[in-house]
Length: 200
Length: 154
Image (cartoon, rainbow over all chains, first blue to last red; front, side, top):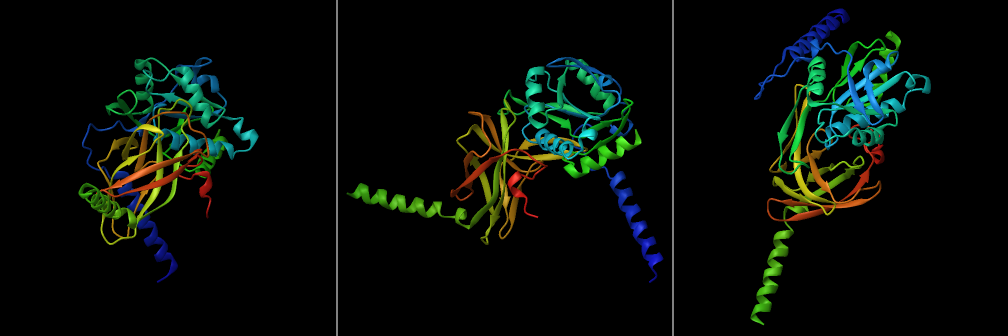
């Protein structure tokens, strides 16, 4: 068999797999999730320990955006640690052009002070911020972020929060340009950051 | 005297029961993720191997560092991570259960005191036949996803 045919077959298979991966919608027992593919993103203002913080404050920088909460025992630490590790692998001049905001979708329990401590545990440059529930809800909608409280008797305060676990990437012009899936390994974080720094 | 012998028999019997499934189990790479300051909960992770030829189930985990210990898993539904308690963790005969970030884990809720890196938390796993096994899990600062600092064995 000639190499060309092999390549053709491989490409066809790859396309098929990609197609299935894209079209594959496993049965969802609960309400359907908003599709994040059409997320508009955009500016917002939240409260941090050092006062109001807006996405537009970081114009000229690539901004990584993660929506979670500090009572999150595994999902957030996993993603935040991997992302922070990626940031640590960047050159100083690259890090200078990147910002990271951890947005709490649990303002009931997460004060700005608490968020500061939590975010800085992962990376000194990580900003923790939150706002009134309706403000958070509105931002989440624009970014295609889903979150919902789930009653779990034992989890500190009686509930956990299911939440979208992607890390959003906002370009230096404030436009939402992409996202990284949960627990993207540090080297992939580096690749993604460099890619978008180049474009911008 | 009769009581004593009964007690002795009872003790031997319970020792016999205790040396059940747990003897067939080996645990590797156990660690506890260092929780951020003020975080009320954290997870413990490990690989539980069943060297026996009978399927085993972990029904419970206990540890002295948190008020509550639960077995949990994660469901990733369209990018939304959902953490849920599970009744048990099955370890198939000659198989293993991998407890790792984003998947199954021992959930330590309401930590009694702040932890620091290098602390060792004894975690007791209880199996479906009543036997149990203690695992010493070291507290590790979260590095890359699912890769504690000590695990750099490539």
